[in-house]
Amino acid sequence: MITLDHAYIVVGLMFLAFAVLTLMDRAHPTRLRSALFWGLIAASMLVGSWIGDLGNGLLVLGLVVLAGVKKLGVGKPATTSPAEREDRAVRHGNWLFVPALIVPLAAVGGTLAAKYTAFGAWLISDTQTTLIALGLGCVIALAVAWAWLKPPATAPFQEGRRLVDSIGWAVLLPQMLASLGAVFLLSDVGGVVGELISSTVPLTTPLVAVIAYCLGMAAFTVIMGNAFAAFPVMTAAIGLPVLIHQFDGNVAIVCAIGMLAGFCGTLMTPMAANFNVVPANLLELPDRDAPLNGVIRAQIPTALIMLGINMLLMYLLAFRF
Amino acid sequence: MWVLLGVAVLVLGFVLKLNPLLVIVISALVTGLTAAWAPGVGVAELWAVAISTLEAFGKAFNDSRYFHITWLILPLIGLLEREGLQERARIVIAKARAATAGRLMLVYLVLRQITSALGLTSLGGHPQMVRPLLAPMAEGAAEADGPISEPARFRIRGMAAATDNIGLFFGEDIFIAIGSIVLMVGFLQQAGIMVEPLQLSVWAIPTAIAALVVHGIRLLMFDRRIERLDREADATPAPSSEAAQ
Image (cartoon, rainbow over the protein chains, first blue to last red):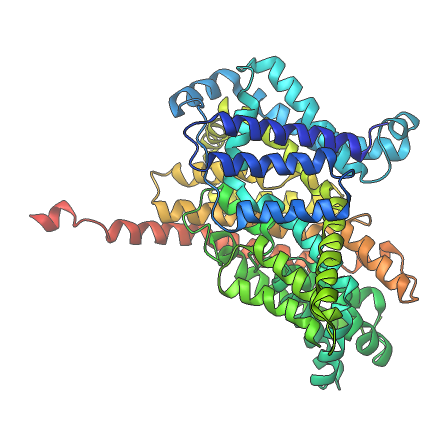
């Protein structure tokens, strides 16, 4: 059976290849530091379960020192020229899209197969099934593309290194935020925030409570970069005691729309790196290092209108059903 | 109360534009230390607390390595780009004369929302779809009527990424097995309230429809905005030959 551990080995080997190729790239502006950074991520994937909690903590400190104190450079491995690409785009035709489509099809197909067929359940573990199937799809698609296009031996990893360098430190941000959330949970930050809000804002009418809950969800999400972190805090503070228990609001409506109000915050924060910073880097936007980069600025109008609409919907629906 | 200093560190780091990785680690240590601090606690105890906070962070870090599986797509996308994937997307769209950048992204928004609502969130995404396909196709559509300015090009790219995010966020919660629904069910269960995932996902539908309308209207207005941006860009640089005469 394919489990998360197998996927981690494959991911670890990929980052190891990035590290080795970076080390061999004499023209890389931050050769040693970048190679060490990708190497440490490879180590985390390959041996993370054997080095203990303190070992992992020290590994995190190492990663942060390597990438957080000074910027990592971007390598420019040899690749095809724009003219060559135009040429090959004509030659390969629309078949070029096929390997890219294998990945989502494998992710969805694998998930469904693991749920509904005996073979699928035998093949793929039932924890994080979709992610494992996605990883499997990437490997299959790469094998297909490799066999078809016959690139030079290291080309896929040189090209992968080109992309991962352009994403840079942001590859770690979701994982780091999840870890911070665990520390917040241990220290009961949520409980303290809840007490603070309920003692300072007079939540005397349903409308005020709806506005406070939705604004709180959005604001805390902006800080944490993740609506998942905001939801337990704000729902324990306002959602449950005031909206649901005091004003008798519908649980499902309050929670579902509250989460979506948090998503409006996600659209407005650079802390949500994989949604807002990674694309700005991938698309090479000139303002990608600004707190409000081009992606976030494109999202703010929709996010603000949707935040208002979510408040309105919650107010109109939650006390009626 | 002092435990909120950890949150304050996040805000401060954000304002000072420090690297978020650095800020997160400092915030975690400050949170752990302030949670344990009380009058009379010695340096040795605080040192022990700092170590145990680092251990808790390291454990959670190791437990959430699964985020990295999605990066397995990078060698594939890189290889396909090397063979002309983005150029191919441009060729395809250049043939579709009727498409404009705004209308193309509107079609993508609808598809992204529907597929996300069916649980097919991995059909889209920035490394998979936006960089190799959506952004070049939208640029190609805008360029079908002639070259576009750099500001217009970057505006289109930003909007392409924004459209992917908005379609995902306001579609995925309709699917019953998505992470946020699981989180809500689990949280409410802890609080002694039993809610079916389907109840939660049904009430995500009104917001999903509103998001489609709001962002859809913005996309329909987007083509005119790009044209205006282009005219401004044409008007500002070097004086025209007529003016020079």
